[in-house]
View 1 (spheres, rainbow, N blue to C red):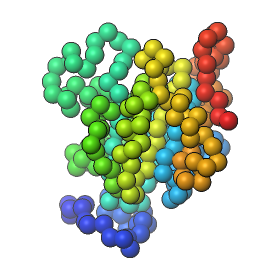
View 2: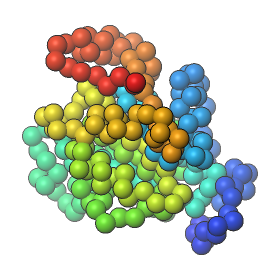
View 3: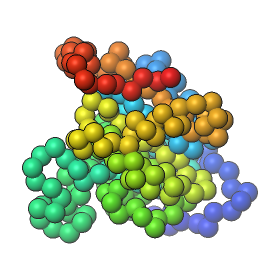
View 4: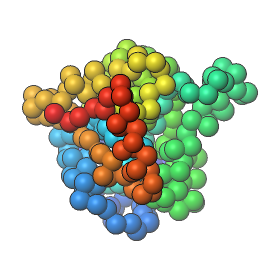
Length: 247
């Protein structure tokens, strides 16, 4: 297989899918109107960052992964980088797990792997991983990084502190697009989440004109199961639980 790398030029244009060095074959599935609206924003070349809020099962991560894979399919000079925090609600932290950083972080990549399996065949997932077109790291390891030609998926961002989110968004460089997903119902850091603060800071017309958008899925967009819609509705009405509302 020919090397996929070449030095990017200012005059390079996004390749048509037919001319791509790596042509991905996507599984068929029907998209809702809301998901199509998401893709419209995601594929807009002016879009730089999308903050994506919504409850469990509403396709935040799925749509972000799908969008990143489609964008890579049109421009093979892009890489996909998956970011999560090592914070979990379980008692065992990353430091107690066996192995090096990559081995310790592997369980945290399961949502990415699951979504890719819904979208692509296993041989193409293997190729993307082995050729390091797709890679991952904890948010704790981002300081000092500079991202160019990257598609960033920040998952479970309700568990990022404000400082971590600032570190994340300030890594952005030329030809980079970020999808920052968060579920306000599921923060595991005792009220220290920075996701709501960042959402409120960038949820305005000025940010939108700069290519930074806030996109909200609701319980009506839950795809995982009907019972989950009922559960989320109940949780939303528990006193003292506040949900981010767009606008």
